[in-house]
Image (cartoon, rainbow, N blue to C red; front, side, top):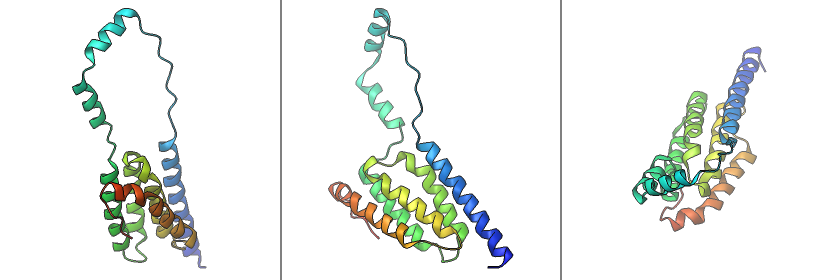
Length: 158
């Protein structure tokens, strides 16, 4: 291995590590401070203020995708992944960064597919490329989510 390849490997590994750490910290639950018990006046005011329309708006602003939307997004992400030319390390890294943004909003039933796809994109961006273990992990997560996706009317593509 030449010195240049060694430096590139270290840089790719450093970038992958940063992305992985960012992903792990983004997934860690934030500790919420304990709220003081509401007084009777506050309880009455809050119960009058909360309407079904307010609850629907709150659900819409959380940014969570439905199972169907998540499965369709995975299919598109897979198309994007296989479209990256072999050896285009920047293309794979860009895809991993996009997956980093999307992961918090996908349905819980599909999260493993997206997390393993992000790992595959990170590995593919390195000199060594995608390992068989990661490839198998992606396939396993897709199989695990296929039931939920099928029930939502989406057939997963690989």
